Amino acid sequence: MPGYGSGSGGGNGGTSAVTRSTLRQQIADALRDEVLAGRMQPGQEFTVKEIADQYGVSATPVREALVDLSAQGLLDSDQHRGFKVHQFSVDDYRTMVETRSMVVEAILGHMTGDRPCPPAPQAVLSVRRRAEEASRAARAGDLDILVGYDLRFWRELGALVANRYLCDFLHRLRVQGWVFAVPFLRADPELPAWLWGGHQDVVDAVTRADKAAVRAVIRAYNDQALAWADRLERRYRREQGRPDEDRRDEDRRGRQER
Image 1 (cartoon, rainbow, N blue to C red):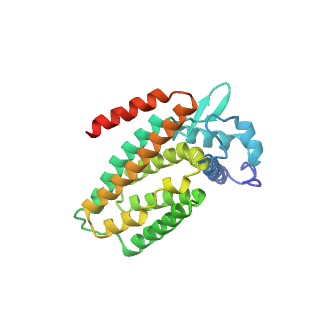
Image 2: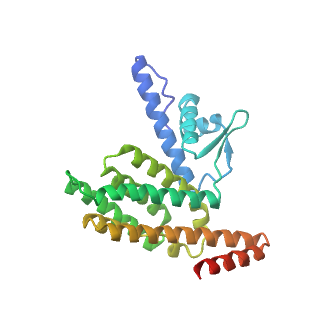
Image 3: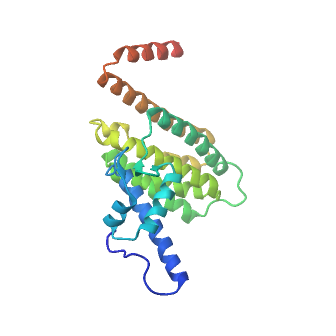
């Protein structure tokens, strides 16, 4: 993003305000992409000045962008030390999965119910294209491509319901989930096995208005996400020399299954 300029050049006040607002959004988007790509790691600290110098812009839109990202739960702010990338826990991730499943249930429930105005075919076609690209990236183990298409897929799918609040909330949850998962997935030698690629199955079930199929696909997706979280936690415990806790968890799961 270098070369944007300071956004405080000549012209009337309205033009300057629009320019600054645009810069604010561009900076927020660029930093969010950096976090999603894992180039800005959880716990990494930085100041407004460092970001402003990096992108060659003034401090005001940078500060506003960082405040926006803090409000989205991606950054933590410290009045004296600046900002740092928020560090989510495995339990946070499990809660995200549980919450997003409820939101998706609400969204897809609308889609597969009685709708006086069904989605335009062109809108469904666009979502299907996103689904195809996301599924292809998942099969190939291409994390960078998958994250982008996955976020677009769910945003466009949610928009078919025409409920901006649900759509925005789901997008925020999905961004947070990827922010937690990406650093661990990049280091996982079994990466492709843990990338969900059922986007096309979701579109097919929604197109048929098949509620049972929609729920089955989403349930399988959530089960995979939670299994990955359990695996990640077990690996962390082994690295910390706490195998007894692993055995207790396995015994507990065995009793629950019985």
